[in-house]
Image 1 (cartoon, rainbow, N blue to C red):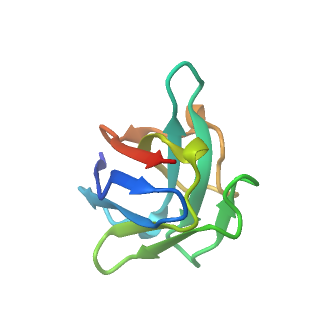
Image 2 (image 1 turned 60 degrees about the vertical axis):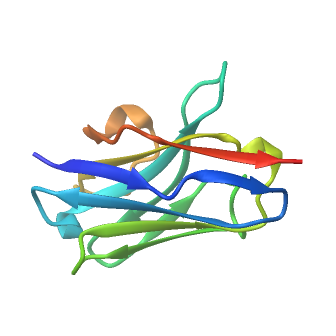
Length: 125
């Protein structure tokens, strides 16, 4: 069992930055893929980025490539999502999720087993 908790959301202006953190308890992140998803009002939950605890391989949605960076600190069981050059369309509730890593990093929400409660990110124009 893995318990994940997000932190770091808030209100920021267009072009600003925010850093989200996902802390895990129960099992080491090293054996897991940890992903960030987001859901805006009236929209489906969508993949943002993910990282493999082993090796640090990453995967990003096209909409955030070059602006967001995901990284894992296995010693601290923490995954960070650094978000730069934020846009109004980045406004959403951001969720951290984890799944035992078998092969490739999953990008579908249904592939993840453990979810946090979410943290709100609002980008004002």
